[in-house]
View 1: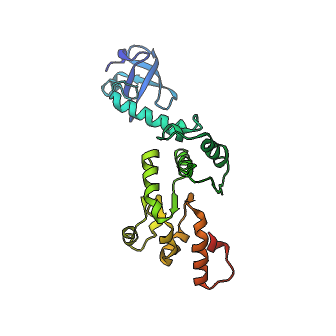
View 2 (view 1 turned 120 degrees about the vertical axis):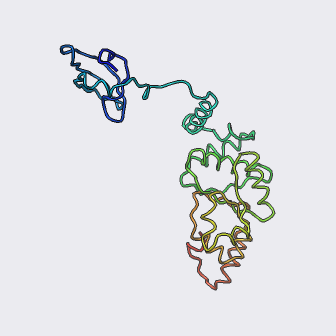
View 3 (view 1 turned 90 degrees about the vertical axis):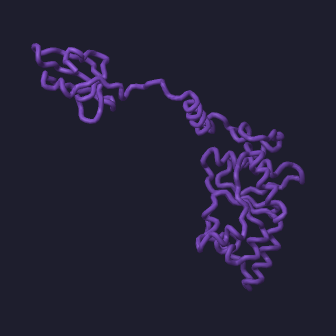
Length: 255
């Protein structure tokens, strides 16, 4: 590349090692020396005098420019991913818009008017049967997942309801929860099974009757724990407390 080809707006490789630069201005000093003013990739402005002996290492470059030749479908997918990742900043009810549910006014009020505003949340949702407590819990979980406020969630439910929880969370909210099974416990190979599954559903009686599993649960950490039909825990707790022969409940035992 000849020095005469260096003019404003040309991108050149060889001026700086490892990167191309954008020519801003060129001023001749005689016929064999050129003072080049250029911009680096980080936006800095520099000057350098080039001689005829430097022509052999100079070449035109299009690196650092912004071509628009990418696949349109890939661009759309990347743009949609970015939009969804930031949607929580602009849509206060993103979980509603991205779920296959039509929540009722009392469900919206409970989730977005009461529960989400309380951090940390200790909330007893005690609506009548059929009022849609599972829908409210699903909206709450998904909203926190979309906002990246929750990464690990445990749902404890009676044995006959765990499959229903799994189906509703998947088909209505697109959330994949695993159901804790004996095979999962056996496959943990001495590790804490609760630490291996970030989104987990467990049977209430399964946890209450297995001291080893109860100990693992006590050591695990979850960002959110939901207990379905929590009134049943009283019977399980007091039965377990009697077995421990400890008349005074401690805060750790209740956790």
